[in-house]
Amino acid sequence: MDVEEYARRGLFEGRNESALKESLADHIVRIKGCNPSYAAAFAQAVIEEVKNSGGLTGDFFEYEPAGVCMGEFGVGSRGKGDFFAHRQIASIIGKTSASVGVDEMDDAGVVKAGGQYIVCTVDGMHSRLSDFPFLAGFHVTRATLRDAYVMGAKPVMLFSDIHVADDGDVAKIFDYTAGITTVGEAMDVPLVSGSTLRIGGDMVLGNRLTGCVGAVGVAEHITARKSTRPGDVLLMTEGAGGGTIATAAIYSGFPEVVEQTINLNFLVACETLLKNPVFPRIHAMTDVTNGGLRGDAFEMAETAGCRIVIDETEIGSLVQSQVKEMLEKLQIDYLGVSLDSLLVVAPQEMADDIIRAVGSAGVTMKQIGHVEAGKPEAVLRRDGRDHDFSPRFRESAYTPVKKVADTEVRDFEEMKEGVVRASEAAIRKKERVLAKLKGTK
Image 1: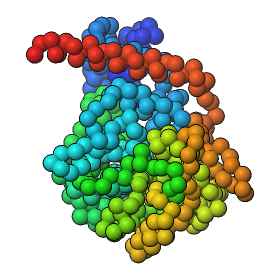
Image 2: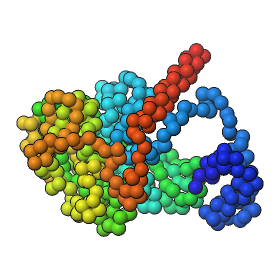
Image 3: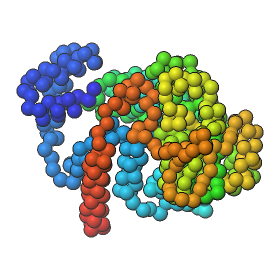
Image 4: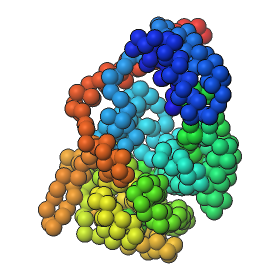
């Protein structure tokens, strides 16, 4: 519970301050189990701070509201709203000197230094794994290493950030770190730095855990999405999913499926490719995560300016059998959910060599599509006919709560207007503050 927001909303609604204090203190007692007199003093202090910080004006205290909530726009839900919001973030950052920048919507950023490409990436842990810190740490670490590998980089170090709410057990930090270092040690990539904080400091009650893990790697040959070109083929490895599939399993009553997600197949396949003579011939790589194959094919087509044709024939066989059975029972579209498979884009003549190289690591890979010249789009070829393969508003609803959340959606075009307005206001603010800073040099 965010006690600051509770107090701020109460004052905004004109609630009696004494009644607000009493109500807030009651919530604090029920969550923290503390002495009522302590809760009352705490509630009074929260209200005082909210009053002191309210009504401030100017660039450093205000922002242009979009009038659109994160959840209703699908930010973080790997669908149309999320992709649109990320493109607004890219516009705020603008063009930079990066070899691969955020405007390319790739898995990681790349700069050149000392004659080598330096690759940096960061992934947030799955929000629903808060009560399962080891799984959270394991899967987010595997995810960030994937993002470094698919840019053609050899990961050299990891860094982490962990936030636990005020009432969370300190042991969550340790279990989360154990998950990170299990993957790191298995792949010989050290965890070298990080940060540990409370969520919202004193203002957020409960035991929620959140955090991220980042990776830095070095590369000589970059396999960014923009290198995809007509005539290429798409090759995909088998996948059992990661944090998303583990979450679906836990919250839908299939805990036995979680163990299938605990593997290093993706990372081992990439490590094998990096050492193989075939690697320099690979044009692009990505992981099947952002809204599933639907989302990744769409983003690749947009970035590369090509038409991507996905053939459904072989894809189902690349989903781990227990995972696929669970998804079918839960009526979850496996094409719209993160499978954590490796997707490789390369010339047709290199396909067999790449498949053999990955197979030598004990990982199955098959051809699942090709790239054509034409309108930047992704299509799904099923029974000889092409169907729209655009990402949906959100990724496939993979928990009971997500199935409910998907039932109420605001008009997307209307929300986009507010989002654009807010991002443009942020750009203007950046320019104002930059001008001021440069004027004081």
